[in-house]
Amino acid sequence: MVLRLILGDQLNSNHSWFHQKNKQVLYVMLELKQEQEYVKHHIQKIIAFFSAMRNFASTLEKNGHQIKYYNLSDVDNNGDLCLMLKKIIKENNITQFEYQLPDEYRLDEQLKTFSKTLEIATNTVDTEHFLTEREDLKNFFIGKKTRLMESFYRNMRKKLNILMDKDEPIGGKWNFDHENRKSFDNKVALPIINFYKKNIISIKKEIEEAGVQYIGNIDEQNFNWPSTRAESLTDFNEFLESRLMHFGTYEDAMLTQHKLLFHSRISFALNCKLISPAEIASLTVQHWEKHQDKISIAQVEGFIRQVIGWREFIRGIYWEYMPTYKTLNYLNAENKLPGWFWSGDTKMNCMKNCIGDSLDNAYAHHIQRLMVIGNFSLLAGIHPDEVDQWYLGVYADAIEWVELPNTRGMSQFADGGIVGTKPYVSSANYISKMSNYCKGCQYNAKEKTTENACPFNSLYWNFYDLHRSKFEKNPRVGMVYMLWNKMKAEDKSAILTKAESILENLENL
Image 1 (cartoon, rainbow, N blue to C red):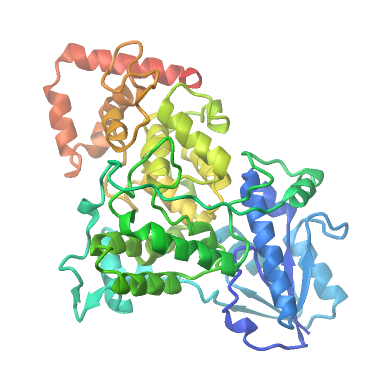
Image 2: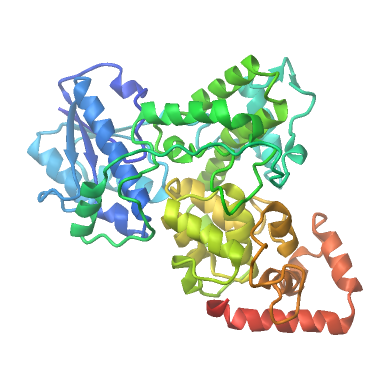
């Protein structure tokens, strides 16, 4: 008998494992306490994974596969991956153990170590999900000092023949990002957000009875995460029909009254492999080809770039630099995460909204994550370990391979520029331009040093003054230092004094 392990983010029904039924193969899926406790997760994230896993197991069984599934609440589930596997191997006279390669370094190491302890044959297979192999990015950039995502992305377009006219990009440009930076201008109607009507009270009760500590909020009657491949595809088709035509234009916009705008929110389904990047890219291009009169190339290219470019790039960075990557702290940030990150109870309206959305929905779109929450964390000098743990726990789509390079690298510049060529920080001006958060806020977005001045303003200049030696020669931020150098000495002193006061009172903002 062969035992095959399926992890919670390996819900790929099209995997070659499942092409044929075999009575000599036993599949096992486990809800594990160890996976709920290595970081404190959002309650919606835990339920989303458990719900999807249970549906996946049920589908396998209906299709004639042998499946052994352990709920978190099962009395014979001790919550430890290796101990459970040993128990199952012994009880079922297993002669061979197989598993799909994990996407997290932590689990990859755990299963490699475990396999070495077994006296039976072991085998690993690919998840058959990604468009690249673990080492592809590293090999692509051999001999090059920097890893520019744009170069990798263009290669992916050529390799996969996506949005290409022979050797040239359709539309005459590889990247339409400059056309996709508009704040919401009320020129189009905002789309309706559909919610699932699911009763997940029983799963929540199991989690609580097991003593699992969690963060975040949940509406027990309206659960907005897909639990099956069919639901995931329905969600994505709804995006194609009602949001893709405006996705690129407003992908960086933020509103208090609309949490999703024109984003697809398919990252959870993608990251647990209910759907694949290949089919998402294919469906997107097919839809655009049928509706070119309504959807511009800029909308489609911006979305495709995230799926086949950025996502694969980030995964390649993760596998090239782990485990060292998880320890990097290039800017020597040491401050603690303010307590209001767990409640949203802050006078800063942008942070209140973005953190509140995250706690309420286990979701925020990329600009909320990067240019509001991440921006503040970087300016405030929060230790990247604390930022990582918060991001990894609060978002339903956060799995370490995708969360870590995005947070520690792109957002916090703790990797010293491996992912991004500049720190992504801004003053209140950017947030005011791209959102309506500043309206009605207790802080003034135009002030730097007054009592009610927005904290982002003095912290922004303090950040660049503090890290001058690291950034002054960076061509992408040179203008910042030109402006800083032109300021009067007394003005600079006042700004730095204000920033110091803010940093000493982060809990009270």
